[in-house]
Length: 44
Image 1 (cartoon, rainbow, N blue to C red):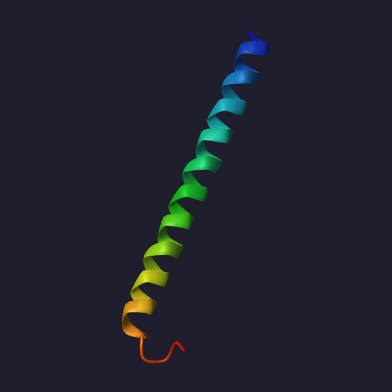
Image 2 (cartoon, rainbow, N blue to C red):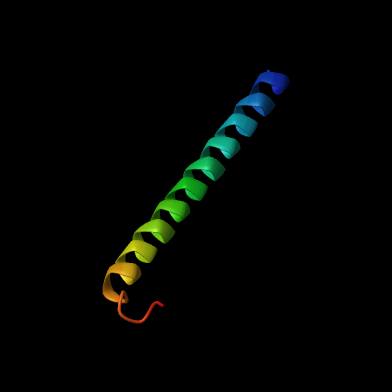
């Protein structure tokens, strides 16, 4: 049971980390797109 539980914990931790990374990346892309659309005149 211990080995199975450890593997399950690792899988859950990896899933959470990947989800957080994806959510943060998506938020950064969305914020960048919003800034680009509003700051087109400022960018060279």
